[in-house]
Image (cartoon, rainbow, N blue to C red; front, side, top):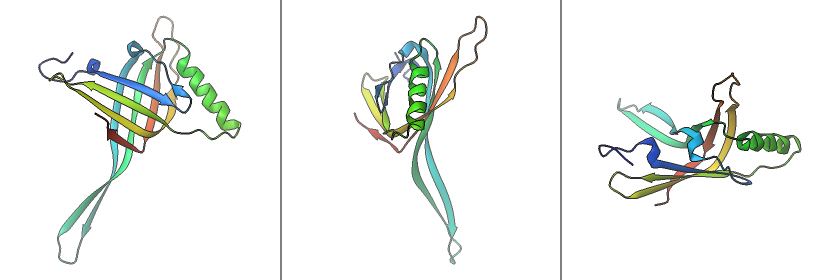
Length: 145
């Protein structure tokens, strides 16, 4: 629940869907989710001497920091790698983000045409938690609700 009318990380739920279905990663295992718009900026100065700026939208990127609870992420990446080397086409996935708003409302966003990249399998150290990182790139983010 939000605090002081501000959204907290625990007010967010995500469903990570790949080409083969949902990655069933427990909410308790997702330690961090971040997303940033990808844009291109251009500044042009005409012969009149006035600067004109443009910003074009080029998708989204982000990541998940995940504590390893089971082999879900390992298995997903092993299958993705096997599919790649077997010459199989891998369709896009998507991410559904649901936010419980401080005013009691709900907002939902969907990241479209998502591709995933496992960037950290996690260090294996004695009594320490294995921390994994899954990055993504998406073509766009749409408001669903």
